[in-house]
Length: 166
Image 1 (cartoon, helix red, strand yellow):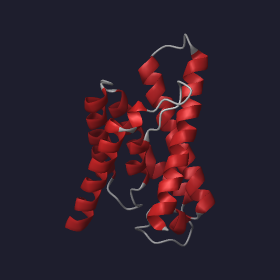
Image 2 (tube, rainbow, N blue to C red):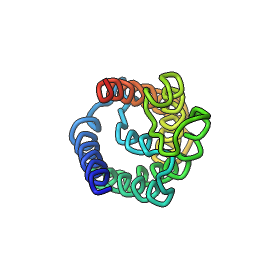
Image 3 (cartoon, rainbow, N blue to C red):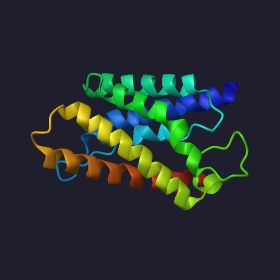
């Protein structure tokens, strides 16, 4: 239990530092920014308490908001996917799986993990950029930011997942 908490805190800190110091300065084609910190929420196991997922998600979103000067945007969007994570993860779990299965390419399969990742990241980017823009005046920029950031974040998560489990 203590080792799992320490691993999650370390992963939390690494994702926060990488996002604040490196990834927030990447804006491909002025619309795609990798939002890698979503990866923390993706990795919560099936039997993890829902209140804890919500707390971890909100804390990471609040820390990202603090370091990137986006007041409440990341915290709101992270809290949303923290609420939805157990319900979105459930359809991708094999029927005869263990109660404490963790999301990953080896545990739920490559295709299921990709679909799960795309769904979660798309919901996050949709909420994040909607809260950030807060109007639909420039809807082409809004849609390109959602699409570009979703694609870039999913590719980064899949690369890290291959390295982490490989």
